[in-house]
Length: 300
Image (cartoon, rainbow, N blue to C red; front, top):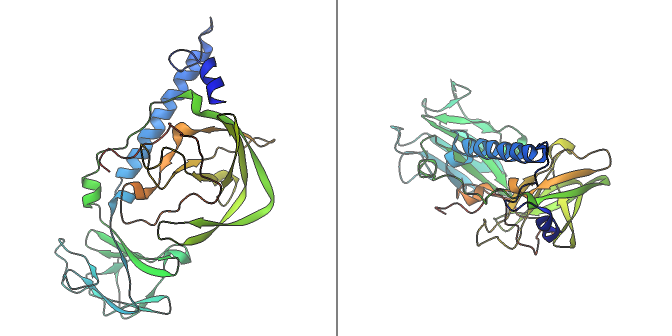
């Protein structure tokens, strides 16, 4: 299919010009929109609330875990004028309780008084502790409980050299069809920790690449937020080894949609060691080299 599309394309990879210039204008608009989308993605990565601002991920041991600027603490928050000890995160049966909190620690802008059980991201919106410029919250992954730290002055963010992309190529705008399941199905999604987590699939996406039929499992809570996590033959070479993500446009009434692999983007683990990224579910690894979308960072 890609070879056929290439044969039909103009020499510059765009649509052949008509007397009224309409296809050329459409191609220019597509490129402009793609460029804007890529710039917005990079801006989000550079945001103080983005993944690059993460500065630590510490898995807690059962029992007390000291937190503070002292290097002996399990969770070290240094270089911010913070006191040696900010409190103790006590883990017991999956529940983290903050004990002996320092007046420096705040929750929703207010000092914390006495012991407090902290909600994690498994509960929805976790409690976010404020310590100077840093934000700290509890995460749960595959039976492990940890602390994630965000710092707007994160060294990872400071060293970020920018995203890297394949040149836009309309050959990778591929017609596809979304086929819904009769009912949402559970799907096991592997992650870089070597375990899996439960997700939901509303259906599959069927398309053709290099003349071969492909079926990709789509995940997401509803039709407006579906995406595919996929791997391909470029992984570990020109693209991130763990795979990439492609958000799906809303399918038409008959399930028709277009997959624009020029918008495939990296998982956060391509940029920072402080995330626990998913990987492609079974069946979502392609034999073809998808030479489109986001490449591995130049400074990876």
